[in-house]
Length: 232
Image (cartoon, rainbow, N blue to C red; front, side, top):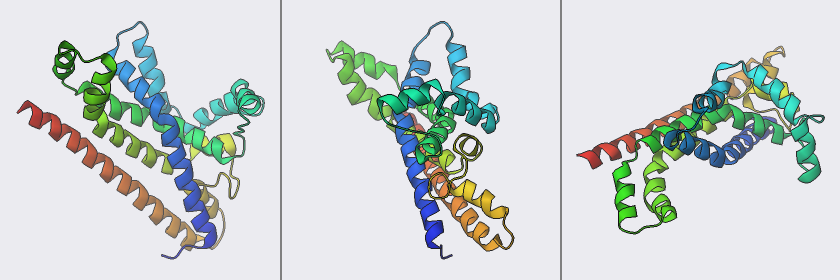
């Protein structure tokens, strides 16, 4: 399976978009996961529902909302353009933003389950021995939650690789800028005689997603096994 230079560009762009998406969403997803796992506050169910909303609404709706907020005339779009010089419309940055939003629910869920599985008696023992809250977090809580964090990152990467609906609605199909693997496959399907290119790109997309899913499952089992061994 030999890819053409154009197809290699599509693959590299997809990897860049996915890596930036999970990197962008990592601190947000972890903060939300920690908040939902450890805090009780009015409206928690609403926050939880909003976090998982991209999983259940049509991706086109998510893309439309991003267009309203981060488009050239959107309030956040103008803010980012004026203050940071970042434009999202018809740019790979917009594709990364759409992928990050779509990946967020899976990342938050994996991290939240890992945080909820931490034995809080270990944290309490460390605090009893005089450890400050920050030290307990970085030396006990975060290392124990790390497999779930990594699993969330890998799941988010897999979701970003397969993102299509929100991206094409938000930033359209611009060759070399927003044409990621799913969009390239869709575009090739519209052309006669492009079955070979579609097959190559589809196989590559499946392999990338499958690798990410296997890695995520391995990390999740490692986290679960670690907690089981601790209890035993």
